[in-house]
Image (cartoon, rainbow, N blue to C red; front, side, top):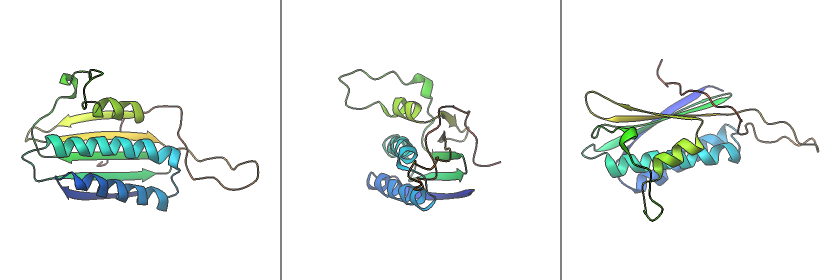
Length: 158
């Protein structure tokens, strides 16, 4: 398996759900188990919500996914204002928002942010996937499980 696709969506809140449904379908079609898919979906939701909330004046944002046999690479980009992840403070307990970057970093093996000189931001995220072992009863399990190791992010475009 080495599949990739991209989708460009208008920068409206409802499109985050659309993106999540598209990714969920891609994971199901390629046999990615729920234990692997769930953290990726949450991280993607946070990245897309940030693009929707903070990407003005960009009219849209793009989500790119690449699935390899043992790796999921995800990029979320918008052409809105420059963003520096290192300048974002840790959220206070009583804050209602501000945990997106923290969640992405906790759920994915690696997360990196790139601010374009011409304007815009790309979030690169990756999660390793490992083949699942068959259960004791001989039934096949899903095609991937969460690994213990972490790797640096790869770019989708070579």
